[in-house]
Amino acid sequence: MEKAKAHIDYNNPVISIRGLQKSFGDYHVLRGIDLDIFQGENLVVLGRSGTGKSVLIKLISGLLRPDEGTINVLGNNVLTLTDRELQKLRIRIGFSFQNSALYDSMTVRKNLEFPLVRNRKGITRKDIDKAVEEVLDGVGLTQAINQMPSELSGGQRKRIGIARTLILNPEIMMYDEPTAGLDPITCIEINDLINEVQQRYHTSSIIITHDLTCAKTTGDRIAMLLDGQFQRVGSFDQIFETDDARVKPFYDYNFVQ
Image (cartoon, rainbow, N blue to C red; front, side, top):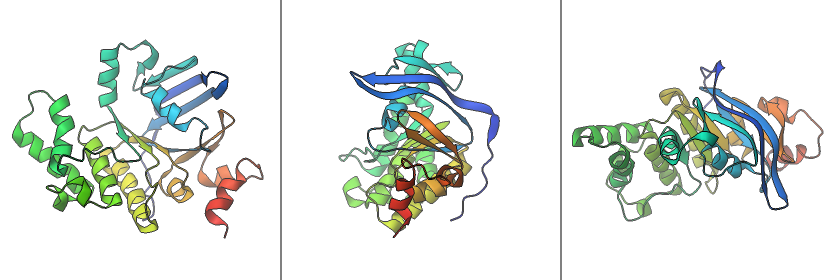
């Protein structure tokens, strides 16, 4: 499915990062990065394994603290928030994990109900049922409501994981390798779903991926992390219009036979 034009507010950054540095001992992962993610935008982060892509998500959500720099998320200075304030902020951020992170002992319905019951005190059964039905419809899996995760395919589990995130109506989505381990047809379906989520729920997203088809299909902008910094940021074509030996292998591996 061709990506529909997104409604992006380039005057409204929902995440703003300046001078971000993070090291682990002598290993310098992030070396002073600057980046804005705008309201309604899908931003894809590309980079080799170990370049700090997942570290970036943990810093944005306050799970790690940087050595230097500032992180502003939805108007909040992440580094000055209390634990309680951080928890409230994380509810506004949806995380789609590579392994879907479903509870194997719970049905799909119970998996989806869990975050609602935990975070929406006093919510009624009627509202819970309505929310579960709506997110399942949103990911195209209403028929799976009473199934166990073990009965689902990899692509279906990925969809249910996204649905469980969407049930709290997050303003920001973070996708960690959303197409990893999936067959090509299912990858296309997940890419389309990411775009549908952007349009239907008006989310802003960070998408971490090694899959350039995913990057090209879902990304309004691409940011390539090289040597601890975002060396190239722009459209897919702008990123790969280069002979840079650090960049070209990404394209060749995915598209050159």
